[in-house]
Structures are given as structure tokens and as C-alpha cells.
Image (cartoon, rainbow, N blue to C red):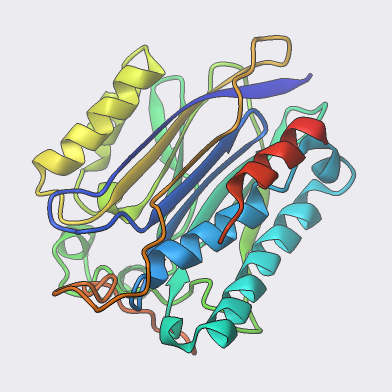
Length: 291
């Protein structure tokens, strides 16, 4: 059974951050959210570099070995971050999370990939399920039974990630394959949503019939809860492959010129990466369209 995705993308810098460091890519076969972090202008650079590599994953490139193609694109984006830092040392310390969903060609299977604490959820038959596991200090404390879920929501280090794309050599993305059904709805989001909005509220928003309405509601919930981070969402419905497909969408902040540093402009000050630690978007879209 051939299935495809119809999608809506929203990204907002929030009420506190001066720049949106998130980047998003959505196509009928692939959804990606990358949440940049660290360094002067580094968050935008890191997330944009990785999204450019993900956008090169046209349907034909992923047909034969979809999981391996997805893994290779993530690793290529990670290496591109390392090259960018070598070329511009002032970007040292930048990185990005990534969460992605890839629909397999001519199949009812999909692959989820994740590094960091951006998330992928699945809504099926009115039930919301978190598919990804956060690479974060708080998640480790939860797994060890050292804090409760209620304590995790208010933990002072809840933004500390234990894995991210920072250009290191030993990156191991989490990847797994699941079956999907027509009528499933995916939510991919940066932690600017999931850190602030309870899953019951996420489920209520995703239950709205229209994707645009649902995506707008999710952003409103994050802003209403304080909007202290960039918030990006992709809401996507699984439909039969003969349904009309939209053109690929890339959402990213414009990269800043290297001028004097503005106050508070050292990237994501509330985010710490606990790991050792331009982009031609039109070309990536062309790869998809003509692959």
C-alpha cells in the first residue's frame, strides 16, 4: 500500500529569543525538525546545514535502503557542521537536535530518526503516543527513577541534552521502523513546544480536524505558556499515495552577518550540550523535484 504525507509547517521565534534557530523541512515523503543551539549565530547555521542535507533525500535516493539513506544524511549533516566550524572557528560549540519521519516508498512502513530532545508524536484513533526518546539529562534521571514525571516538567536542567549533532565523530542516531495507517497524524516539534505544553493539550490540538488549525493552535499554546524558546511544529496526515501532494517546504531563519555581537546574542543561553564537542536551499528542493 503506497502512502504519502500532507503537511503543515509553523515556526515562531517565541516571545523571548531574538532569533529563530529552528529549521524545518517537509515533503510528501519526509518530515524534519532541527533545533539549533550554541555560539554566535551558530544555532541557525547548524540547523540550516543539517536541513540542507536532509532535503537532498529525494524519493529515489531513499527507495532502495531507506533507513541507511536516512542515517547517512544525518551523519553527513553532522560532518558538515564540523567543516563549518573549521572554516569559521567563531562557530565552535554550535550544534542541533534533529527528529525526522521518512515514509518508505511503495510501503505502509515509516522510519523515525532522532538525536536530542526534539520530538515525534503519532496520533492514531484519538490516542497520542510519543515515538521518540529524549537524549537529555532529565530523561536519564527519569529512567533511573531519580525524579518523577511531574518533577521533570519543572527541572532546572530540563533543557540539557546529552546527544546532539555537534560535528563529533561518534554520532549514533536512534532509528526504528513502524507500520502506519491512513488517517494517522504526526507531530514533529522542537522543545519550545514540548517543554511548555502538556501532552493532554497537544492531543487536544491535534484532534482538531484541520492541519492548519491544529498547527496554529500548537504554536498559540506554546506562546501562551510563556514562549521562552523558539517553537516549530510539523503536523502531517498520512493519506493514500494517489492523494494530491504538496510541494516541499523549508522553513529557516536567515543567517546573520558576522558583525559586532548584540546583547544576549550568544545563541541559546538556556541550552547546554553535554557532549564533546550559505546553505543553498533552492538546490535541495530541486533535488527532490527532479529525483
